Image (cartoon, rainbow, N blue to C red; front, side, top):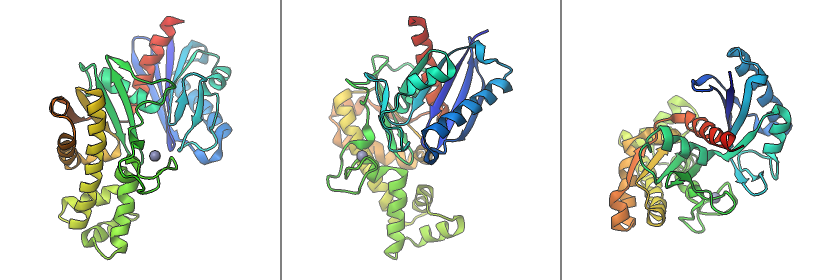
Length: 321
Ligand SMILES: [Zn+2]
């Protein structure tokens, strides 16, 4: 029997899935990345956790035919190295494919995590049946993956789809990428939490203060909850975040004319509270033919999207070898 490994290497957690030939995912595991401990520690941890997933399924290493991994960061498809990753400090210019080949002694395929998630949603999720789609990941940061005519659009170096770093507010808040006013700096979970803290510091947000006091450290989820329950200041924060998101998506829609935009990640859990204003602002700013035809819907695969996508890419890659 032959098996493939699909891995999603993120800044905070790593997901490992073991797929049986023709039998879907039969075993999986999730553990903290421990990114601050450095590259070697993360890779050692990855190897030992992978062994755990294999032994849990009663599969030997020799039965592995390939490994697909998607990674949070700028991955250069020409040099096959991680150029940099805001969430994985110390991985600059790291030859991930080469290193994993050495450790696992099987063919390795590396993909950007947002691209892999988009491909997963396209094949198995909310983008099924649509050949042109964009998947947006809304979490602590904002990621984007583009599918055109059924294929991942990577651009010249593999850096296409960086929706989170579209500059929507020149001179605005500092972004993780070092520039100011990126979408991620005004519409991400971190940005909403920051605005929530500023609201409390300014003496507003009574309901938000009450919710945060009960639940501990202020998160974007608290701001959404306060807004839902009538806190005017919190509602303004959500409206602003949705306005910038809708604006950025209108750029995407004008350029790519996708049939569907799927949105995943922690913030997408807010559902219609977020989707309704985002659709409104998108439609307001996009050219009518494209703005009218695009639907903006929740993604459905959750955190499995990346490993599902990368396992399919791996399968195609292995067939070509
Ligand atoms: Zn940025």
